[in-house]
Length: 178
Image 1 (cartoon, one colour):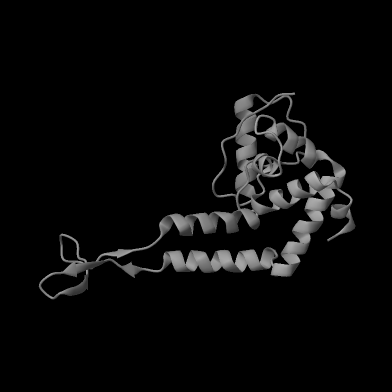
Image 2 (cartoon, rainbow, N blue to C red; image 1 turned 135 degrees about the vertical axis):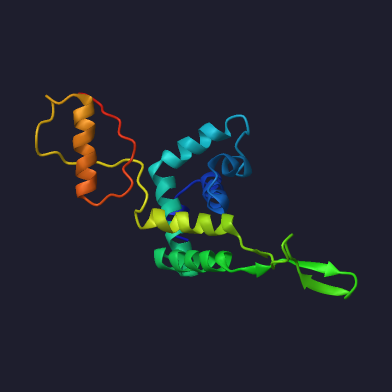
């Protein structure tokens, strides 16, 4: 164990161990013996302490190294999950006449297939976030003063700048003066 961990009190060591189980501070505090009534406050207090935060960070890094988990590993597995979720899988039903499983058909006699769209969407969303495809906030560096423009004129100017940059889907623009 790292010295940063060993320097903690036994109760704080237990909190760190329990926190690493599920990264839930409140539950870790309860499992470490803190009162359920104050567990949330205790977890917040403990996680803000430098010694505890360093111990958590060091043990987290050691675990990642031991398991050989890094961003590349996560991305490779997300791609695999996405690909598996997008595979067509035949929908099978039991045919009592044939006494076997057969592929289901729709009302028009076409074979029915399924895929895990929820799993695929979640994996693709995580990949997209990692590579920066989605942004809640977009900051534009403006070289000119636009203070004299009315809100509609400013909005049109910013929209034109997005189009010039090749942004196909322009986000909703909220003009904040000040």
